[in-house]
Length: 218
Image (cartoon, rainbow, N blue to C red; front, side):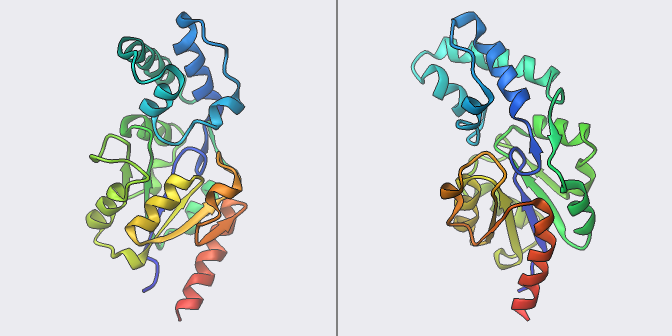
């Protein structure tokens, strides 16, 4: 079956948000005397959503600290979400060339923040559906968000493809039975995404890849 739908991860795939997330985390942790995080520190932890990110930093047991850090993070991040965040090279050009496909975003960032970033970068209009970590009962690597998109857009699993930068994206795609593509320029090392069906080094590689898949399918 030909590909009808292309699903994208957000952070690390469409956008580089590392600096803004790091700044928000450092602001949120400041009252608790944690060491300042570098961008490299943050990148190693991004991918499972804000709740898990903060749990990794403060632990799961101190619920009052976790709640306060989360609130401080969200307050700061909402106000500074586009200070340094930009789309990766080739993203806009690639989306323009995919006008014959349905397109969706599935992020482990919550939906309101995902939409805020995409709106601010003038990218929202490219997508038929935008799913965040709080849109469905489960988040990636669960296949649930992907299955929701397939249902909403009336697309079969064999007609869909997901593009992401992490093992969570690849694992979710495989669990949902769709084709998986991993970008090598994102937040995860190559060995964690090597089990994807395809690897690409630039977003602009996606268009010729889709063309090649179409030719293989006859």
